[in-house]
Length: 406
Ligand code: 3PG
Image 1: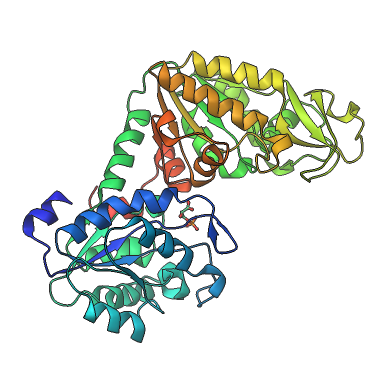
Image 2: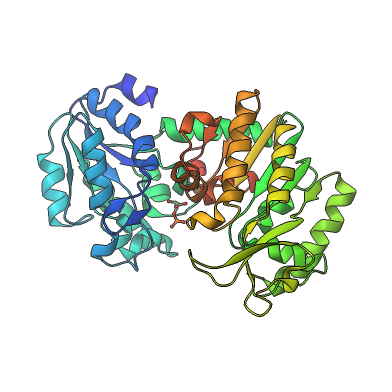
């Protein structure tokens, strides 16, 4: 970005890809972390006199305009935080975007509507994406430039992330640069002990990263809905808890391979079993090998790690020099099942104070720690990217970075 600023941006249209994919409750932004993280680069360009056009997505609309997925709430939040005018176009590359882009003055910011309102954004067809990218680039006139600052989307081969970079002079934004720098410290010689905490509902989303971490991490702590597939792989019965039957074999193979590679899986020894999936469910703590012995024999569904497990996880985290955490430990949205996630967040916060490098990866995990009352500066780094940070750790090539030669 400094290179672009040094070239001079006054009066030039700069197309910035940001990640404004914020969680919403109706039209209320429940965690504005991504808006705040996107602001510095937009502000820097505006301060330097650029005419900034921001591209972003929200959710997964079906390639057609859908009010439910409008960027309006995110843009309103951006406008509240910004010291410069921000407008939202009524479309992506249509008459409204074209007219507003052409009329944009120095230091003004225009946000295009959700780029996923156009099916070409995510198309698998290279020619379709390229055509859309040309229409996006055309909004910048003769002297345009492109800045990719959407770390959360760098793993997507989408027009606004990948294709635009080959049309306009392209630069890496500071958010992306900062994220990559931290994640590099996890992949290249992380200080040991290196502890990885994985949660979230689906083990299938985490298989590739687990595969890559075996032999690299000293310990992998497993919580969240995915823990039940691990317990099943150990031969335990898990009642009506989330279970990916078809992954049990893979998990068993990982457990065996890890033992030989010096990576220890730390699995829950107790879980909180509820009568139903609801905030007001009855619940009790059960030993991991006695889930079906609870009062809720038929309907028993594990919704959090138990207190013994939370304490064991906290102890492992306290002993670590590097910690990466992705995925809540339980259904933290229900206060009765938030204790495990809270305990892990607190353990990471304490480890940060003690000098460890702690990284919270992922939109969901970031939202979880903020919802539970933690402040960003209690952690070494809160990544804005969920899928992106996992794919980085998996060692995958990320199209948004490749496009910029990064
Ligand atoms: C995210 O939420 O991780 C990013 O914004 C990417 O969103 P996507 O998974 O819908 O591509």
